[in-house]
Image (cartoon, rainbow, N blue to C red; front, side):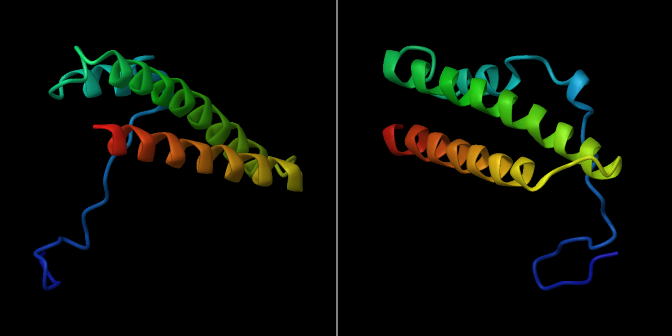
Length: 99
């Protein structure tokens, strides 16, 4: 069912892999498929850093969701997750800016 001006199906729900199903360096491997990301040492280093931060933040997100579900989270958890998410955005921006 297509019901917006951009051709998006509003009934479509994306499926997400469980974190255990995502290979450890999936983001880094994907970035290496882009031009210069496997030859330019600065981009290789930045993509590796982004991959590490991505894995760390993903673990934090799922730990936070579990804690919220079990009602064991504290306010610091959400603040720390927000700060680390911001670091991921800065890291992704730096990769794009350099590329």
